[in-house]
Amino acid sequence: MNSIILYYMKNSGQNISEYKNLIIYCFSGTGNALKASEWLIEKAKEYGINTVLYSIDRFEKIDKEKQDGKTLIAFCYPTHGFNAAPLMLKFILKFPRGHADILLLNTRGGLKFKKIYFPGLSGIAQLLPMLFLLLKGYSIAGLLPFDMPSNWISFHPGLTDSAVNDIVSRRQKQLYNFADRLFANQRAFSYKVFLYLPLDLAISPVTAGYYFCGRYMFAKSFYASSECNDCRLCENNCPTNSIKIVNNRPFWAYTCESCMRCIGICPNKSIQTAHTFIIPVIYLISLVPFAAGVFNVLKIYIGEGIINGLITVFLNWGFTVALIIIAYRMFSLLLKIKFINKFFEYTSLTRYWRRYLAPGTGVKKFRMFHNKA
Image 1 (tube, rainbow, N blue to C red):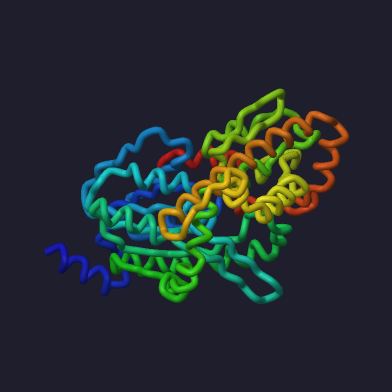
Image 2 (tube, one colour; image 1 turned 90 degrees about the vertical axis):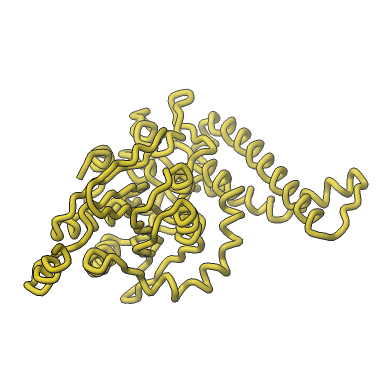
């Protein structure tokens, strides 16, 4: 009987879906994944689907809702280092086993130059979460790599308002079309998943470098300039609870994921990336063969083979992290000297570059984001 009713409603032009519930778990640094989640909810309501939107900011436990009827669970998150954001990976690893349909939507750093739109890359940002969820018993109903405006202004000047608006408008239409296919057919896979797969796999080694080393380095590239007025917006709104106030200035812990929320919401634009600190450190690390140097000093010979190679990699990683810790401690001490603080402030490119928050997103929206849709 239900199939007959669905057939009649579809052919009468009404939006109808077998899904009765949509539950979205979202992590969003500057609002891109949140904006995509909101668009998804708008479409779901056209189909009469009950919707719930949860932020996973600072999550301590996972309360998986029990719903009557067919349920779609969506995970919306940014791509960090060509992988899912570590906070979302941690959340998915702890997510209880089940048998619902799953949608994975990862936002990527899209760019626009003149009239040309440039896509981001996913790496394993969908592949790894998909593997974890399949092993937990879930079915993959949708995959969508989603190119929103790039927010990583530590590495580029930021997009103009017109470029941001063009990209957002374009992506809104794309998501609406994708959602129509997903809700009507219970299956939808973006062609980008398959088109970029060879390149995504080719860059996957970069993911390991970022996950085990790079993200700790980038976490220590942030600092507050003399324009900081101790408003503590950054501390109170950090999604990973990684910002602590030390001597009336924010201090970033190694759990920071460089999501850019603190930079985006700072009212005085006082949070900067210390380019004249981080660039020399990266350059030094790239030059110094730590493991080889230690083996040479200790007159230890490491032969060839997989095991010996892993020992070398592990030692290199350990020495790299140690150097980052030492360098950041020195950097923190130097910042207490006023003229040195000013030097880093005026040589930081982020002092002159644009900030980014997704259109319509701000501190209030991030706080509302914890409520049911």
